[in-house]
Image 1 (cartoon, rainbow, N blue to C red):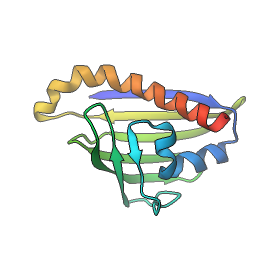
Image 2: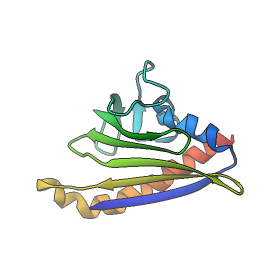
Image 3: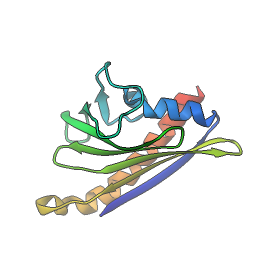
Image 4: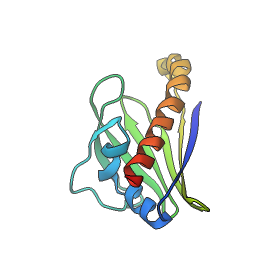
Length: 143
């Protein structure tokens, strides 16, 4: 299993951070592996609904989806992504912190079949990319 949890404190109110990260249309502004999200996407995901996305990970552009598994307004959003044969579970957690808001992005991914051969590479890449994403989010919301 590949796992990564990265956190950052953002100098913004928790409600504002949640509103921004819950809206998948903002993903391409901070999650650089997502190229586009359709403009008609719900501003807050609906549990059970699948959203189309265009991914641009290291292997080139590909179509994919995020399916909303859990939504706790103001606190947490959990997705199952599906792209290029990978299905990571991605969780965004928003918590009040003394300096603003703590945002945590958790990724868990089980690789199976021949994709298991990618485990060492993914175990190296996923935490590095995750750190970039949360830092990008901090910059986007604090600028």
